[in-house]
Length: 282
Length: 263
Image (cartoon, rainbow over all chains, first blue to last red):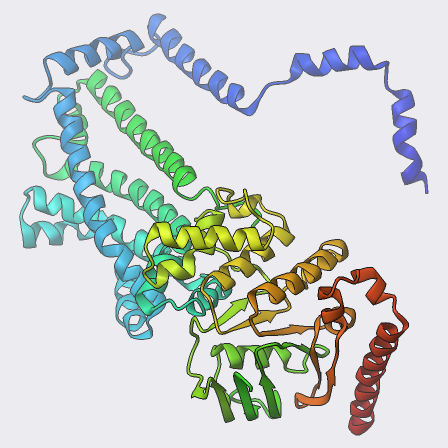
């Protein structure tokens, strides 16, 4: 009983409305502004630590040096390639890997979700290789396929393939059976069902798979470039580290992080655009 | 002359001890709106699934125009309880979906879809997205979609079961108008007694364990509505109430009989 009485009591005890409102406004910060403030604080700390020379530039160069280096890298380059060329090399590899993975993993995923025999064939294969860290089988790929571009793209491809195929199969399995029956009783053939019902139904899951795959693929790629490459962001960071060019290392890490962030944001935007019905209470 | 014929249909799910449906025979002709009414477990959904071709009977024969029914087909349009519309397409494309599957050119199928939307009072909703519609509007789109494919018979699986009482009344009236104008035979299942009595030209009452037809009534309340009488007037007519109570009593006596049989 007292439970029900307590709100009005509490109301009576609180001070008049206007001051309390301003008090709330003073402490209120949106989640986004908290994130922005955190980043600003981190940058300020970086600047402060280096400006006061608490840390040697060899270990942590000041932000200004990194920015300067960025300009230098964009115009003159590092290790015979500009920053754009390193970036381009990395993006090309992940792009090729992604295209190949999307073109093969989606059909395989549909087959796994749709067909018992395909499931029997592909499920164990994918589940076997998926948990292996790509860098663990990279040596084998190098032995088989050499240290050329193909090996790197193959490695990325394998890393991206599994999440997309698994997500697609899940999406296909969870297609609303009423929609399938509705399409069948409107005369849909087997292929029309896949094209008009199963594929669009699974699209939200497929895009989630692509997002996860791209994340895994990007880290795999950078790691692969540490081992055998003459260009690419991973290579740039690795070779700069060998000569203790710390500003290039920091810059490389930042660029890698920005690209990963950009890919994630781009895919989220794509997801919102392609599957606006997802998450709608329909 | 019956269009759709069910002859001594039995249905049993693999592994189940008792059949879901036992010895069902019925006919559906051109001017009929046949309603199958029954409590849960009476096999009415199974009956609709058999006619739609989603499942096969374990015995007996289903024919449409004397041709045995095999699998789902555009000849038997279905309206589902949960709309089962495609949210990645707008309303117009949803209604035109059956025609698209049949390879009808865009202009032609969209013209037909517009006609059907007008028939269910949804003109002007062509470009809406599915998730922007209310429950009643979704069911109207479902009805328009089924009709646009021009089926021989229309099957309705508790189409108004998920709607609120007010919308349900409106939808019942709309269904009668559409049924009158499209001249399609309709097979509808419901567990709402008043709905069944109001809509049906033929009412079959199903009893469970196993599902069987225990009563077949010929009714004319729907026709009276089509002839211009108001729905409320019909539903408060003593004859309507009497029929409703009779059906209700039948359902309960049936339940009691089963309970006694078990005890």
